[in-house]
Amino acid sequence: MSRSILILLAHPLPDSLCAALARTYADSAMRAGHQVTLLELATLQFDPLLRHAYRQRQPLEPDLERAAQALQACDHLVLVYPTWWGAMPALLKGFLDRLLLPGFAFRYRRDSLWWDRLLAGRSARVITTMDTPPWYYRWFYRDPGIAQLRRTVLQFCGIAPVRVTRLGPVRSNSPARRQRWLQAIARLGAAGH
Image (cartoon, rainbow, N blue to C red; front, side, top):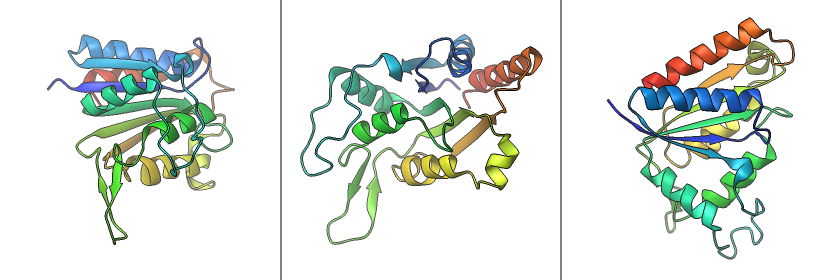
């Protein structure tokens, strides 16, 4: 079954492992017949600061408008980023702060603690690289960046399930390991997972 997939690449360098992973996923998904949009966040023109918090609406720049349209049109969201200091890089955080706004991604209910999840009906795949061994990050650090992104961002907005691929340690990888990672990501892309 063909899917509409939005890939967000949140690494600033176009020759990074994250960029290779995102492009591999995209190429494999397109060859399998999926509709793919790849957004390289470092190339988008937008202010990553939510200047007025939620007190005043900050107009979206044209690149954020296009990103919002792509997010609404997708069935599956793929986020590819490095884990830095235990979590997502500032580029991705600023993008999410500016894009996932009340009325677009969620809506609080009047006189209630509950909210409506306006992005329901979409699934997600998180692909993150790290210098920490993934098992150590998950079991000893307790997966802080993944927990934040999965529970308090994506699932808060209704995006579920959220599956995670942790790759590392990057600093000590070999060309053979890097090739295995790229092959695994190609399989995910072909399957639309």
